[in-house]
Each structure stands twice: as structure tokens, then as C-alpha cells.
Length: 112
Image (tube, rainbow, N blue to C red):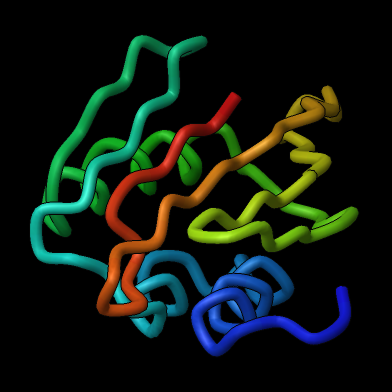
């Protein structure tokens, strides 16, 4: 987790403070029409409103608690390795890949 770019550091800060929900996420620079994909839940959303309603609604519903295990930056991508615990105590091992645009904003996210 050393020598991260400003956008990777912003993502890292959000992941370390994810209990702040969408308000904390909104501090990360994002393209207006950024996309997020969660294939295991069949979620494919676009833009701030859909991410807030669908993704953060789901995270709230399951009582998600995120633990950042590692973050790696490689070229125009930032990858986070997470443990997400739900309200039942089940732990999901998740990899999130953030694609960064040429303006240093998140343009697409895959949660795998």
C-alpha cells in the first residue's frame, strides 16, 4: 500500500472508512457516467444515482462491513482485496477493480 497516486489514495481512504457509506464514497473523484458491475448479484449500474440506490442500498440491506486487505495500483487500474462481512456473519472475499480515466477519475468498477 505504498506510493499510491491521488486517486488510489482516495479509494484507499474510502475503503478504510467505508462505514461512512455513500457520503464517504462521494469524496472519491468519479466520472459522471461511471459504471459498476457486480456479476454475482447481476448488478450493472451507471452514474451516481444508480450506484447510490442499487449498490449502497444493497450494502446497507446486508449490513456490510468492509475490511481492506490490500490495494494495488497498476497503470490505469486500482485493485482492492476485501473481506466483506454481512449481518449474518458470513464473510465474502471480494476483489474490486477500479478503472481510472485520463482525468484521474473512476470510470468503471468491477466487484468480483
